[in-house]
Image (cartoon, rainbow, N blue to C red; front, side):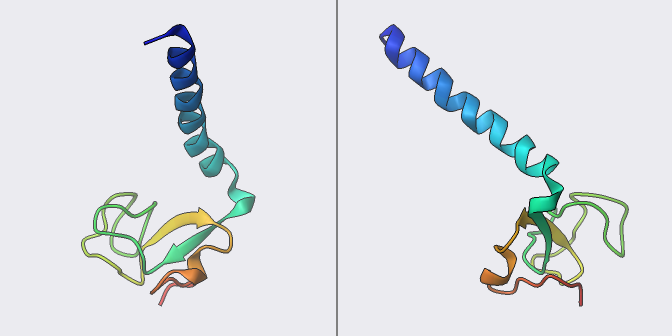
Length: 83
């Protein structure tokens, strides 16, 4: 690999590394989306457990994941409120 290619790969990789924490920290631009979390992939507490990753079934209407605003209602089964 050339040094230009290595530099480009490093630059692109750093963008991906920074994208996750920026979304998570920017709570004003995210919303809780209920009914779309996969089992063990939920964000934070639900009615039956203490925190993230403890959902027991896919698509539970009591479990949520945080998504960018405006995304949830575009997903099949997505809801801004728990049912």
